[in-house]
Length: 566
View 1 (cartoon, one colour):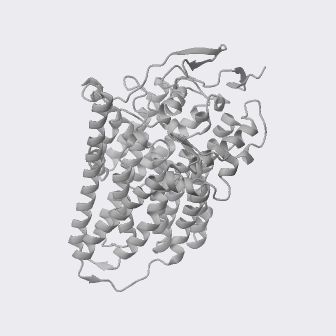
View 2: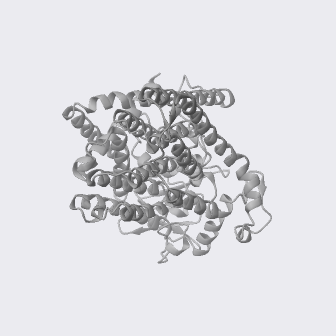
View 3: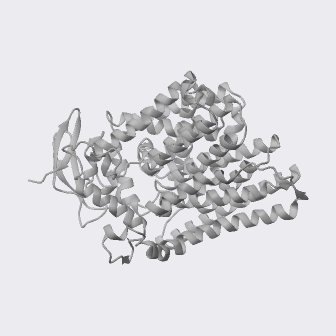
């Protein structure tokens, strides 16, 4: 029982602290965000905390003292805002209720396959050591930087230790739900039932039903959830008239979310192209020229810079494994031939070149060219991973359409909010995904959902329903999405209890395998470990390396590791 109390207690401590840092962002960086709801404040806080983590790791390990200090500040900021603003108290009650409604998703016994390989040990290393130059040498996983690891490193506190290193995606899920629910309520109040309303509703239902399994989120699905929110803001800006103030807020928030998603998964830097398109189309050049946005632009530039810096000091490449970004070879740099090989490997893997129990006989270099991969991809990936997702998207759309069709009196007079150009951007992103990295984890779930939900939302918007029926329709289908989320998680937990002998009533903590490890290198400031029997690192002492021929030196004030080829 004690473990369960600490588990829930810390979830709310970290939740409130994260929102508190969102208030800090709104108060001192960009005051136009001050009136935004708790969901957006949580996303802003998540962004700031990852930035704080990525900066401080160059000077301090993220141990108990560092993290307690960080969260005390966050909680103080949260309490000050709640006490100062009475309107926030209703939001507080709602965020608590929403978190409790979804909290069953946090009870996980088995995490995804990459968790024991590098997610856990990467984050644990940040709690035990300050930044190590050349850490990409430890394993392939240490080269694939994600800000989620840095957010999680701030959650290492007494009693709970590393057992909430999977909670970041849960908070993203909660904040996304909060933003959508809040916006739907406001649109019903203002009687703005339009394309955006239906697109938002479909997105919320899709995420709650399809992304229900928190243990499988990794670093990928959180970024995809944020991608849906990016497009919701994009549509708000692109197709509906806004005054300069509202346009500036929407554009600024969209930009922050793009940078946050990109810090979680570097592939989302591609979506930065949305910003100049919106600025040009909406004639919002004042975004770049407005003095109010100057601190925001500085913070975004700092975020990008620290992301690239961590990548560079880990691997010698600003964006690993993009070989062209490996500009200056350093002592710790990953060899260029290995960078090129891994770039090919990731593309080969995403195009179904290999997986559990199969491997293409064609060489990897040839496999990824000229659609040589297409037949395997259709067989291994499209059926049944993509086809199941498409079926779910279509089923959600059909069920909602059936309700609207049978409960509306007549069609609206047709007002064309969208045209073909609306579909150009999401379809271009979908084509880029298909040609270069067509794995669902690299954005596929959401990239298939967006154009379909756009089309369906256009159709929904042509039907006229009374406000009360729309409200009932919304409540019914949101409630169903929550019930499906809870039901699927109950079924998952029951399976984990029976299959893995998971004693949930004894402990809420996820499984961690005990492995044998030993020291492979030491100097006066740092000890490096590895595991016996080819085990994954799990929670062994850190840093834990899968490469054993290492050398240690000092680089400025930091420890540096590199291959010892002598």
